[in-house]
Length: 141
Image (cartoon, rainbow, N blue to C red; front, side, top):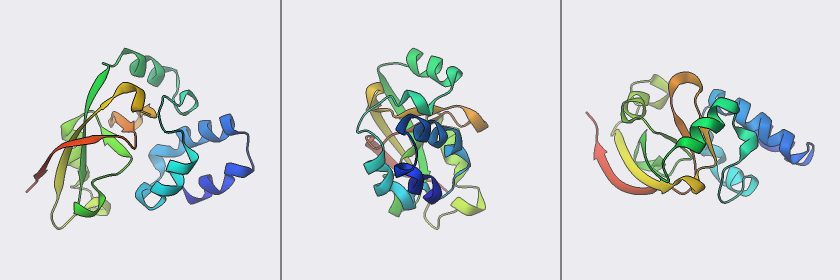
């Protein structure tokens, strides 16, 4: 992700956004780059260049208000990556690189126009946003 962000002044913006969308799902530790991404990306969406044709169709057919989920620890409840699928979000906490000593499942809502992109690869139904409003935080065992 750091290399993609570093390219922001060397690429045309649409090309950079397309590359960011294509690479998003293979980048780990996006939270480390949260502030830089907030500066790079628009405040609301959608960012059409970040989605492929199937993702655009799914985005456009999604409801006006979404419920999203995030498996995380206490220090990263405000991340940019969320899932439309509660089980997918909870599953992240079983992966070694995402394990937490006190795992949490965050539920949030947001308007569709606050979604920057929907990513369907890896079967995660991932929502990219900086505007999810937390409605519940529950511990997971």
